[in-house]
Amino acid sequence: MFGADGILYLLGGAVIAALIAFFKGRLDGAKAERNRNRAKEADAYEKHLKDIADAGNARPAGGVSDDPYNRDPR
Image (cartoon, rainbow, N blue to C red; front, side, top):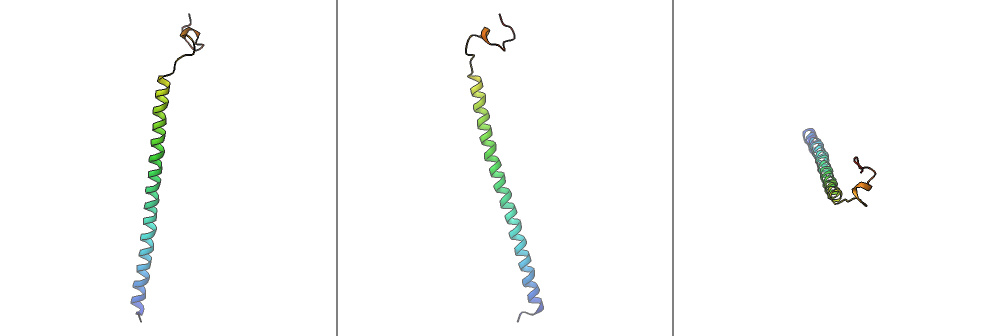
């Protein structure tokens, strides 16, 4: 019905379609991984900025001279 040439074309097309599907899946997976990493980095950066703000608002509980880590206690 198809002949030898038709079967070879059919098999070649099937191999090419399988390769395209495989590489498309790889690219989609890589894109999803990049998006996950970007979201994780954005969350980490947001936490970092909050930590910096919290550190800037920190005050000693007592006076500065009561601080045991003060390098010039008087």
